Image: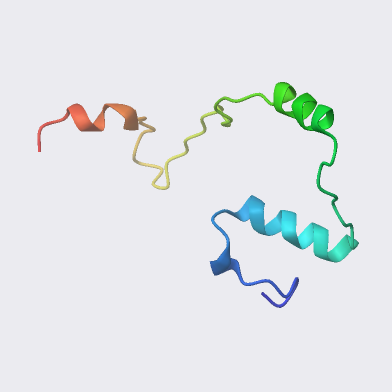
Length: 80
């Protein structure tokens, strides 16, 4: 809050907060599209999908305990 003068509780995600912080610190003003062809060009260029870091790393805190990986996507299948 004290670095950018922005309240983090007003943002859904950290990237949204950092984007507004960048705009505030650089003083850049982003103009709205006035030409429909520019708008259509950007809409066609957008791509969707999942963005994740797929590299797994696991290290045990206790040296007597071995490393084990429980896949979290299978947890709903376990009986309660």
